Length: 524
Image (cartoon, rainbow, N blue to C red):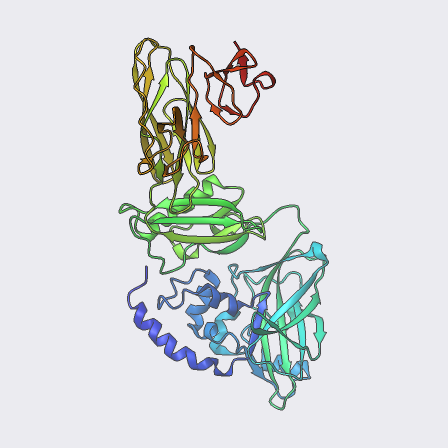
């Protein structure tokens, strides 16, 4: 939920911030500079005290310098006329002010914190990294310097000083590259392959001009690949400020692998009991943390690398995985619609025989559906299920109700199917109605046409039996006069035919399988 007064605060920040971009020049997009991470994570529009900023380091920076460093992210610059002398640069940007480029109005970016988000650098790939600098306003001639913090420097407790850095790469003029409509400078630098743990990559882009304008960015990184232990990798904010879930909606928590496949998928219905953001968020986090302990965790990571959910500070909680290629998404979905089920209302089967019928269902949200039956067995294929029911042996007619339950994981629909079991002594039912081109027939409806009986496989109207594939010719079952086997006729379990002078009984549904050469037929 928004804090009180957020609308007025947003208007004030917007009015003050927008003009500042007119002189924009650029910043390190990869590995992301601190000010880029804070601006991208957001939350500073929604409260005056910074409590809605999810990243604790960015929140601390905001409390020190307000929103200014975030909206000024392309302008971390300093004028040094004698820019070719590094001693002059060091004098203009004293120790402890490097990340803010010596600008006291951006001093929050210099503050130590263990919560600065870090870009993972896999040293098993040779230590080569392509730095991507977004050039909002390109400048050439210019030159570049890249520094890396020395082993032992701790960004969690120390402000960066020049003595903490060593120069690792130099470049002169670099051509501008256009990617997705944006202009970038790209340079491949070599990082040490024997480093472990955290470090700061310090980027200097120096214009060759009389004013000596230079741009300075701090990017926090973590070296990976050299340790057998797999650390938790931050995938972003668990809940962002302003996500207003209401009763009747459903929160979707999903983590995807590199191919886009969901490896974690949890849904939490929002009710009047858990509508408060702090309540449903903790319920969802507890569910993820308990059921996917090795895949994902939600919370705040401590100095030992353990993740624990913070109920006291909702927006500080992050989503962590142990796979760098995984991505995370949290969505609000409208009230879940129940599946729509299509099943026959009434069916008839003879005593001791099998009944096979189909059930189909659709779901508005495209959720995976499950099918269960109160009797018989169920074979599921996508959004369709085939139910096989074995009728009991009885001399009397029996009325049986088979309840088919279809669920999308949130809502379930129970559809009854009324089955009449014809006892062995029961009177043969009347002949089915004569087919009418103007009538509508549901699946399993039986009609008479040109002296034969036909059974509808699905909904139909105006399609002629014996011509359209929707109709299957019905052959009488059990004892009595046997029909001659036909490759064009479908037979159900128990039906008897004559083939080459011998009688054969179908053991299950079949069509086109020759009696002597198929196991479906049992010789009488």
